[in-house]
Length: 123
Image (cartoon, rainbow, N blue to C red; front, side):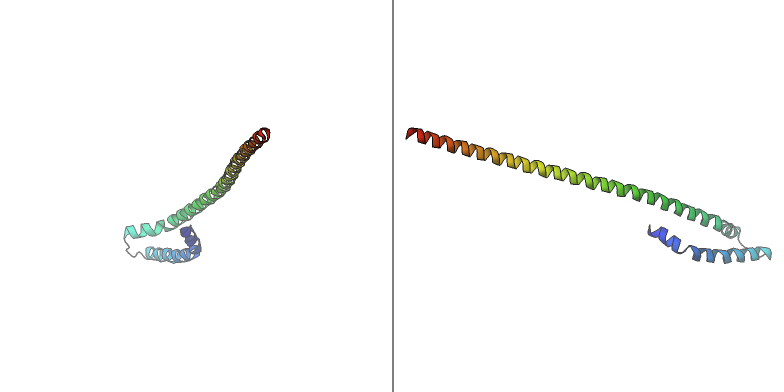
């Protein structure tokens, strides 16, 4: 993302550098000054390469934007699922503890009542 931002920030600066370079090489060609063919080919390809790079940057930026939206939706869904799962687990754990306490209390009461009844009957 930083590269894309830098490219956008410097786009006009790059355009301003390329135009004079092309003009200089056009003048050199007009006055038939000998320049290495590789050099003139590179200058001739500058605009095409620059346009291709800008198009690629736009394409990558669009794809990243789409991915970001998808990732945000995925993160929200995941967070919701985790929250529901944790809440369900906590509810189940609390329910198990309460059932265990009720059983224990019921057992204690049953034992206590049985003991009291047995003790009352023997008296």
